[in-house]
Amino acid sequence: MKKIMALLSAAALCACAHHATTPSYYTLAENADGVAISAKKMSVDVGRIKIPEYIDRAQIVTTDGVVVNVAENERWAERVGPMLERRIMSGLRTRLTGASVKSGDFIGAPADYAVFVEVYRLDGAMPGSVIMDATYSVVSGGVPVRTRRVEYSVDSGDTYSDYVHAIGELTDKLSRDISRDLDKLAK
Image (cartoon, rainbow, N blue to C red):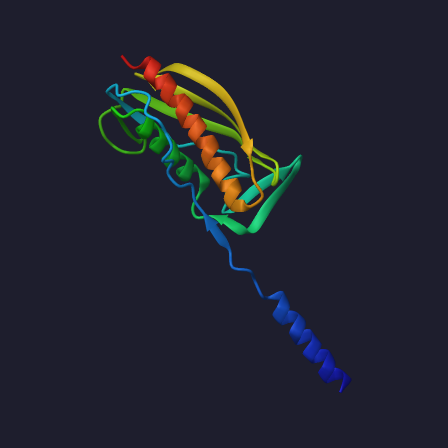
């Protein structure tokens, strides 16, 4: 009888241990709040966004000082780099209404300007704030014409949905600043 009870207890524990929570998946939706700043005609290629490896993973990453927290069941719907690239392109199209904006991977005529972004940090704590530390370069005719390092911070909220929304907000700030520089550079 003791053996049967021990077996039943072990089976119950195994069943509980294998019960996994269904993951939630997140993406960066397009920003509908951008305000047009220029209707100048130009073409812009957005290069692949370079991001740190600790962020470029399926799970959403938060940090608490030096501790990196990887959320096992809170996941990105796809790699972070392509989502950031699309969100930046969307922001540029919204703000630069006369511009033709496309991915640098698209084969076609060379653009008037190419934009390259390297993100050094894109993380934070919940609750707390999310920080983006990045550099972007605007290149024309193969020559860098504007390079700028930026750092933004916004409230992260209390949920992963809030956290993802905050990352979108930071990305919109980046696309706003890139748009302003492109407007100033455009002839």
